[in-house]
Image (tube, rainbow, N blue to C red; front, side, top):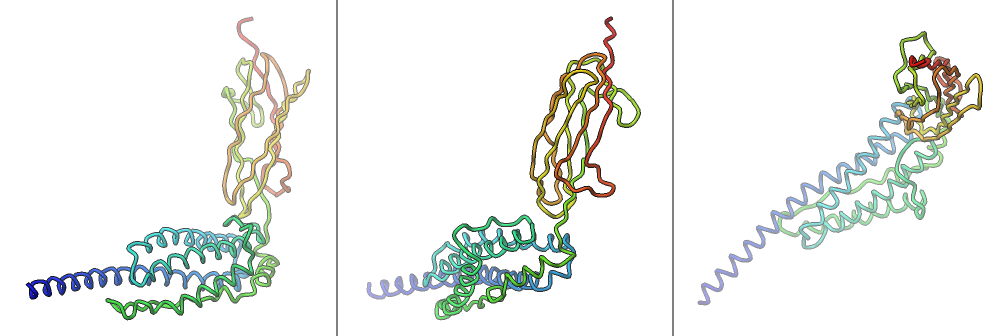
Length: 307
């Protein structure tokens, strides 16, 4: 019985070591990939902030957006790291450090986005840029002390250190240099991209709306943001008849960089045989050569054929 008991204890210990070996090695592979991504991200952020003034605004925007998207992908990886819990629980430490660094980089990127008028992470109301950079340095240092904890466990996993290049940058100075770069200047340009009229007008000369007999006319306007900057725009439509009061509608919308938007259609009251002028204007948009910020149409509503 003693021999059987001893054999079972030995087998159980062997199975436990095999399970721990598998878990540690799986964690090591996943963690190595994540740590490599974090260090590459750190280098890319530092490079973009220190050399980005030589890029066009569009090229800078593309790289900035890629960094923002990559940062979001780490959240899912951090969740995967939490199970199973290792002994010692280095996986929980890395998951928590990663979550902290995501928030820190969010704060840093939000600072850059706000200064350069880019869309990016929402700025934290409780964490300053200085606090975020200090946290990045602290997590890199604490991880450096803990990354060897599995070296003596099955699998002998020792993970790479975290870099902290971005933590040591003078970000306000670097961002000020970026903001003053002519190639990164935030210029505005919004254009009327399409106007839809219902009911559909009859064929007519340009800028003339020859309407069928109708009591209402629906106008919908689509606009496009042609710049890599968030832009507010106000749309005004005025229908001025030859006789009687004018009808006017105004609405606003904020467009993300490089996007288009179709305002909700508006219904104007008309009558058979009416003649009017329809003016569509984008307000608050600086004039740009070749871009349509205002269109004026002659509106003619056909008389009813019923006599």
